[in-house]
Amino acid sequence: MEPLILFDPLALLLVVGASLAVAAVRASLGDIGRAVGALGPLFRADPEADAARAMPMVRAIERVAHMQTLAVTDRVRARHPVIVAAAKALADCTDPACFRRYADETLADRARRHRGGYEYWAAAADAAPAMGLAGTVVGLIVMFANMTAPEAMGGGMALALATTLYGVGFANMIALPIARRLERLSLDELAWQRRAFDHLIALAECELAQPPARVRAAA
Image (cartoon, rainbow, N blue to C red; front, top):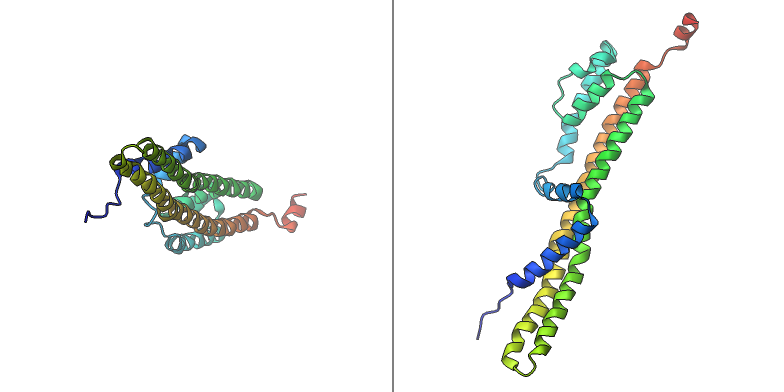
């Protein structure tokens, strides 16, 4: 009895390569780069730990602003790049609405870039079953083309079944889990960053709002 062989390099290349190619056609070059780059932090990223490190930095910025002025908030020792950039923007801020706009645009841009990465893998997951079906059709064509030679029909049948297996497997065991995890990481990351920005927006509104008495005195 011959051993069961489930690995067919040709069928695997046909399904995975075609699925990634279809996803690439639907994405921009930047999205493709982000999708590939996201594989690195896929399991290393920890939004909860990032939030736990970042929020004390936000509170330190608040203390400095209350004790001195917003203009020196960029001197706070912050190690997270998002908080560092926010502190610099806050130090240059002269209008709470301006800083709110900076925060909203920053988060919207980050959400757009994240979305491009995980939607690439979602598109590959969508395409994989269809690519498996295409491989199945090719295998059946090969099989029926060799009807007069029964010993040659096995290769076509094996290709037909293998591509179906690889299409379903790649979609549901690789591409879709990657897409869903990246989406979840994005939502968690944006949530804590939104919370941090809300604190800093409130700080800007508090520190830059002119008290009524001061306004009357100036008048």
